[in-house]
Amino acid sequence: MRRRSLLLIPLLMALAPSCIAQEEVAPREPWGLVECIEYALANSPRLKAEEHRLSAAGETVREADSADDLKLGLDAAAAVQRPALNLNIPNVGPVVVRPPRQGSVSVQAALPIDISGQYRYIRRAARYSERAQREQYRQAMQQLLLEVIDGYYGVLMGESTVRAAEAAALEAEEGLRVARSLRDAGAATDLEVTLAEAGLASRIEDLAKAQGAVADGRAHLAALIGLRTDECPELRDDALSLEVSLEFEQARALALDERPEIRALSWLALSLGASADAVHRSTRPSLSLGALAQAVNPTTAFTSDTNWQLGLSFSWPISDGGAADAREARERENRDAVLRDLEDVRLLTEVQVHAAGTRLEVLTQRIAAGRATLSSADAALERIQARESAGAARPLEVLKARAARAGASAALDRDLYERSIALAEWARALGVIDKLIVPETALEPERGDAL
Image (cartoon, rainbow, N blue to C red; front, top):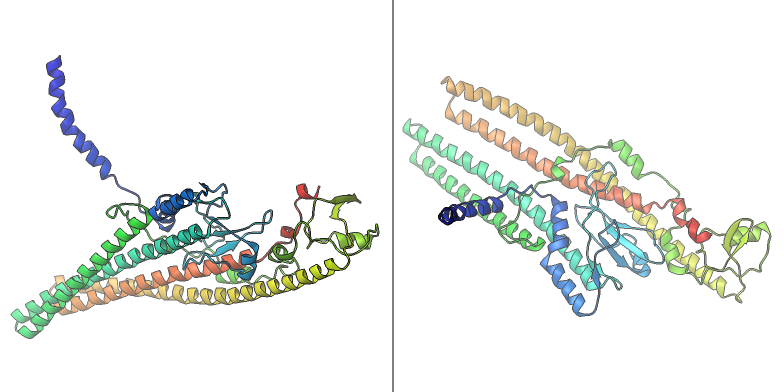
């Protein structure tokens, strides 16, 4: 029995490496931009080093407790100075400013994956400092996201360049073969063959450079998101698979809709002057409906010293010798300034939406024409190849047909990529306008607070 067990040891040792190898080479699903960002937020060495620095400094680093996840805290003054706020991710998504909750202002970056209006938010929690969301950690996260996005699109563009270089090398190789055939038939000179050989060598060199650039880009992206430099997964281009799910006129109507954001008095204005202890008016207490309506002002913050009157909860007016008038004037001036800034941002964004929608229309038409051209080039190439098989077409005609087909394919790929960028810009502009429009209920006190 012991001899049998000893005989099993070499068999198990032979099987073990194969099992390990199978586990190591297990295929990984292609990653899109969202997967790269999620993995970077959870595993980036740069963020882990920043968290270690915060921990050494006595700060508590914890997981975000919100479903919105990618949340960076800012103070009210920064929010008022920059209504559009400052996590600028090119070609990916808008920075969304949320209404303040208990005196805080939160910022959230949204990735427009579906332009029908549904935004897919990053679900993996982003680590951040518990005390005031330390500025250095916020900047480190922002810089990391920008570099991941640049690296992601750099790899995709590099792979497109590699495909184009491969097609050019194949065409050059075919041209060299045709040139040699023509020289053997006495229809080409040695100089033409030499030029074709030099062209093929140049195309091969370009291909090698493009492949090297893609390898470097993939290694850099892997290091950014926390993988080994040889572990970068295959990437998929989510943007190229997007289709327009809204008609352009409907989208413009949605973006240009005149909703009562001006009447609603933006919550940004409230974050400046209205606080829990500075909301009283300098009028004497009265039970008249006029005084009651003046006291229950939707632009004021409701404090704890509320009274019941006709079933309503409101902040009772207290005379303070004219100081409240000065505060009210400052609040009104601040509100007007913020609303003017918001209106400027909204108008500018509407122009951006219109420009992006127009460009998207042009690119859509170009893509339709490019697909028709590619279909025609495919049909022409098939006809010429059939004639070549029958001996009725010259090799040079086949070469020209293949070159025309490759050119049509490259033009279509370029238009598709440009449309993906235009889609992202259009969706980002729509998202900014949608978040700048504040509903009327946003300024009303919550029922639990009022009662």
